[in-house]
Length: 182
Image (cartoon, rainbow, N blue to C red; front, side, top):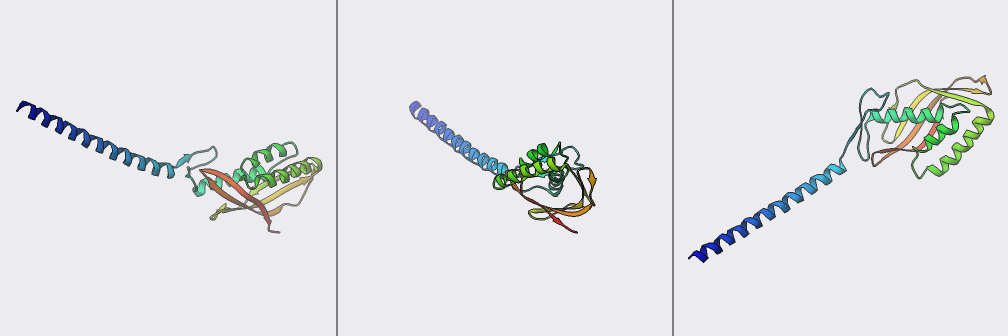
């Protein structure tokens, strides 16, 4: 009789181990699925200097406050320059461009930097209205002030358009242009 009870005890221990193993496998599977959902929906909260609120960025989208801040930063690099700062600013601006647009924009900004230095151009862009964020285009309305070889030019109204894309939480400029209003 004693050997039967010992075998019954072993069977119950094996059953308990099987049950524990099934529970651990199930919990590992649930944990894996929740971790993968979190990785796809992760959100980063940014509070950069000069931004009054918080900017939320996830893999392929960002909130409007973050996009407005990036639009200000991008237009500051692209449209506020002097002969001594143009090359450095344009190099920093190129880091924001999408890889598809980079080669074309690099040659354009190198040419532009050379022209700014030769012609002694100084330019400033002042935002006049609230920055408008659409699906993939940001519109910044403002005024361009430019001086050419020390001579102040007439201020010009400008509509700066910025086509962007969020790639794995990174802001990438696809296109940047000025739709002049006058």
